[in-house]
Image (cartoon, rainbow, N blue to C red; front, side, top):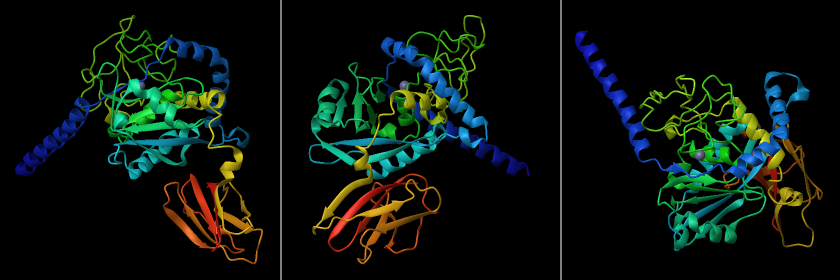
Length: 396
Ligand SMILES: [Zn+2]
């Protein structure tokens, strides 16, 4: 028994050391967030605050009531993915990683009623000039590649700012400039892209807009709506670093605010400078703020005009264009009907995700197609016969 205890203590010791080593080594090599909240941003937030607060209240009341009239519909947000590779087409983030990353985002943002989908595939940028990306080259990259009215996410092997620091990701709060830059190594860590999208939807770091000074937000919360991140359910944060968090994601700092109160920051908040492996959630009011900012400021985001949304592509070798009714779309239950205008022809269908992975296929008939096994999201339905093919977007 004594030996067993001895061994279990040893394994416990080794286990914790392994965890702390993993977190520690992750922290040591972590590049920084390059987003800066400017005075112009703060002025803009001040201007739109009344509208933001209206939608935040709607959002928060929808979470606390069971009344159907208060439910909020999910919003679909198009992403254009740009993958930077070398001039000969090597390197770049894999499609598998992109898919996982978007899936992870959709888990994180579902509580904000926001769902992301890939709009019109991936744009590969094969150019050695951008492969190790310098932020000073942003203008030429964006001018050649940006798509209007979607979130353009540029995935680069490496990103470096003008001070030669390695940047994990960065974005802006500029109307009609919808870009996010991500270093591939950070894109897959499950918190950095969510952090940048948080900035994109107006969130400020939990330690406030100023990355250098100490936060003026008080621990007692008295000035929480006007200082720090201007959000009141995130505790005052003196700015987390690898000096004031231990390897178990616990805050060990001794800083105090103007009243002499010790800070108790949330080390798992996505918008903090905590270790990336510690960050796992947005607060309820951060979710409300992102939703309200989307509705008031970014609701122009769309994947092409409305006709493009229905008919993504059509190829026809005959003079008769294909015409189909697909309903209900968005799918409200577990079935979907596809009715061709020409009922004498035989058509086959395929339901795939935006990366081309097929989940369902068969022949079009009068019977409904069961889609109960498909997770919520955006899919493509391809309908074809020997001569023609049409692709429509369906949403579940
Ligand atoms: Zn940041």
